[in-house]
Image 1 (cartoon, rainbow, N blue to C red):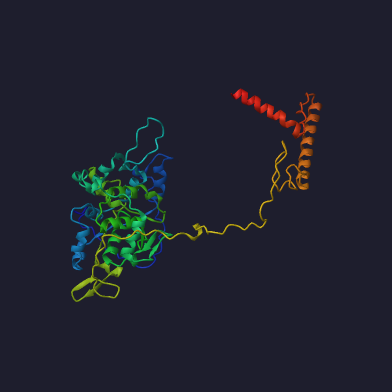
Image 2 (cartoon, rainbow, N blue to C red):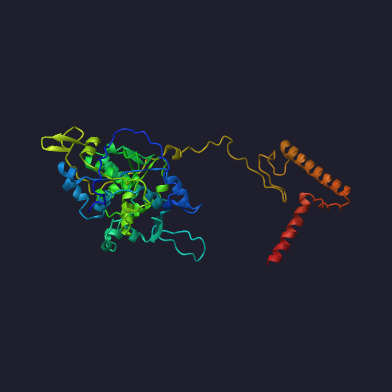
Length: 452
């Protein structure tokens, strides 16, 4: 596939550094007031753009096929990345220049509503939002995910109706991904609390090389490529086990979440934005509004492989090395492996305790209550018979509440008398409970007659 580079451009090789690197400060905002980055105040696009303008833009890394030929890995790579396949286009299209203004405008305005998922409608009868929408070079665009898949160059138009596109996986269960991680990196190397693992534990050097390509393309980020996240693991699983993968869906999700990244992080995806711009007939390097120089891509060649410390020079030439320093021998992936679930959190385990011992002994038999006697719990009434004298503390509290209510009533009556208002009629004095019970029963009977 022809590279979208200007004649005479110097393509530098990005060395892969080892160990922690110091985060850079966000660049100076040189895009303020740019005509492509003017969005209506108060909109999500305006808020996103204000943040994205101050972020660094990363350089994509693509496969160096000459390097793969030199270390005799081309046949094995081609098993995973066949010629003219979506995976081949994904890594090949990464070797395109990035234009900062177009990338910031694109991600600031990008929205994605996956097909088949419910979308909130602002009011009844409102039109359904498009699956993919964005603004590019000042022009708002809307399209289906299938059209987006073609315009970004990952799929051909004739593939949209085939299983290459329609059967693509969107998600894989996490236990399956962690089980896959144990296949390629061994046990006890996945941090369940952080949902990631160190790439240095991956045994096959080619898998580490492919992970680096994913971490600068469809799952791109800045300085954390030494970690393999669950997103990386999903794409690596589909790639190595040759499962159909919904690459357009993954790329759309990446663009839709771009504004969530830290301000000190990096923006990626500019190579695919350039491909989309060219599909609409735009020629970015001839656009007078693009003031900043294009950010050129890199190839992960021999210098990168030496920097990753995954190759060694042998009599037959440079080859991938194993942990003991010998020539790496491929270990085929098993057809099946067990899912791995995270260990149970000790805080979530409820200990099984013996039933509490009854220190009070068996319950004392209670005589039947007298007719109409009020019922109270045993801790309220002293003695064995319901209706016995109240506990002194309970009686004192009832007397205090009775005095308080009486004081409030008298205070209200005095106020109404001073203001010349009629007195509040007080409720009738209740009869003792034994005398009041038949009357209450009579009211209940009359209510039952009315209900009948």
